[in-house]
Amino acid sequence: MRAAPPCMFQRSAHNTMKREMRDRPNRRQGLFRELEADLKTSRPEVTDIVACPLCLAEYGRASIEQLSREHIVPSRLGGRSETLTCYKCNNTQGSRFDSHLIRAMKAMDAVEGEEPIATTLGSTKGKIVAELLLGKGTPEQPNRISIIGKAGNLQAAEDLQRSLADGFTLNLHMSFQLIPERYFRAAFRAAFLSVFKAEGYRYALSVGAGQVRTMLNTDMPVLEKVVMEAFPERDPLTDLLVMPITFNDVGDCYVVLLRLQTKRTRYITVLLPGKAGVDWASLEALYEHAPRLRLETTPYGWESKLYIHLGYDPLFRVRQGMRDHFRPRLSPGSATH
Ligand SMILES: [Zn+2]
Image 1 (cartoon, rainbow, N blue to C red):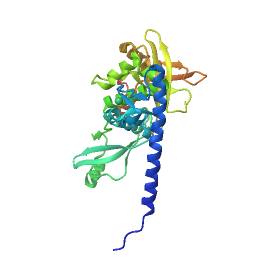
Image 2 (cartoon, rainbow, N blue to C red):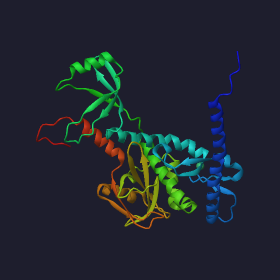
Image 3 (cartoon, rainbow, N blue to C red):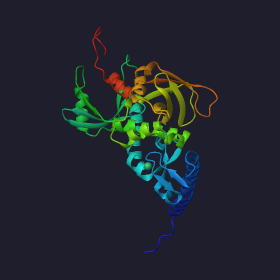
Image 4 (spheres, helix red, strand yellow):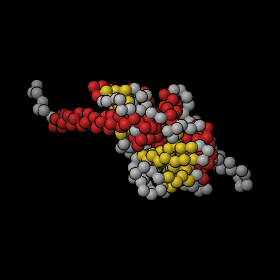
């Protein structure tokens, strides 16, 4: 057997790997230098040290290997901004929660008819596994629901087609594989890292940041009502925006706008305590006004104001969308909700 000649693919893969190994530590070192200089302004006595914003564990330049570059908004949702967190925090919280932020946006895509949903249809001849695409009709207009691709069980599919008639009941099981608690944690965590990116350790070492960390690092349930869907009047052209804001009765807070891109571009906003800390209950109380609330703030680095209309959380729209699609036909005059 002749030895195979060196393969082009291997060589180019090797070069790519070499390039990545060269670039990665450089970008990590760049972030290290930025954070190190910033920490020095808050704590002049320390040198060559950074602290992980999520657990405040300190790392010297010699232990830079224990720090990871982390996308603040997952790159699969178009995130570009990065910061440093320790591997421990990145591994225990990062990707585990982020996948649910991605799934929440995919659920929005499904409800808005952009992407099919994996569905199991129940029939007398057995289960059919298929991809279902919801139509884009309005709640008032009849929606078309299409089965995309080949249904798994042909006999059951034919049987189902024959039995379809008025009054026929079809059992659908759709799964978004979404754990809401993890989705809220991911949003909350991304917002916290965004404020850290904008404000550095002045924020990370503050009382308000401590309140957020306590929630992220314990089993305390994350506050769902500080996460809302947002509709900025202008596209901010960046994956994250941090805006200071003062609410009457609540005090100084941060509004973080996260841009999440799948088939569509959507925004969520997360309200976080300002440096002095807040009473969570009064921050959460703002949610009740969400559908009518319009925030007026000036983002860091901007000269003009940005207006943002708020809505309830995106998962609220997913639930509402599913209800609208599958609402049983009601006789005229009967209540609709
Ligand atoms: Zn950490």
